[in-house]
Image (cartoon, rainbow, N blue to C red; front, side, top):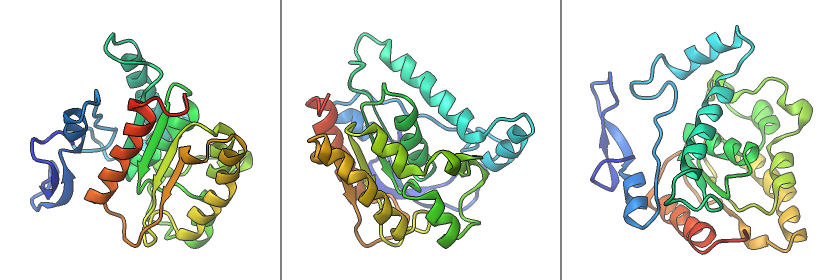
Length: 235
């Protein structure tokens, strides 16, 4: 996220021998464009071992969840940002790719200090649809939140929070978020934004493609934050 190079490039994860293609330097690029950017290495990623699924299993024995532990850290980061003199606490956004995307979404759900969220390929759509139609082995233990569907699916939570700005980057062939689930999410959430007179605050990109952070995804996210954070959006 903070390499000097920006754009698709080869990256070798700590502990791996072979590189793979990733979107490099995108947090630094946001900073170049005038956003004060805090890039977090989340639990279980890079050198923050053990792997997130191992941490999830251990936490379950203590009646805790990995998603809850990650979101606790994100909310600490929001507290830090909100206390800085060079940050407007009414203009804080969250974003991320894949694991970072779903945690950006749930941070937006849980913390009303998050003005806008732009999860990229974040598994946002419908937990219920994924459970019935998705590849169940794809998402790790951290993604599954005990008892969540007894309270509501992702769309119900998002609709209740409308019209706080939300953007989804949801490729139609993304294995982590079946198109049927995203379609259901949009059908339930968009009316809430329309009723609030803020239809433009809900943006969904459903273009052909797979689970990948592309330059087009970055451009869409940057435009969204430029509108909702730099220019104040609906808040």
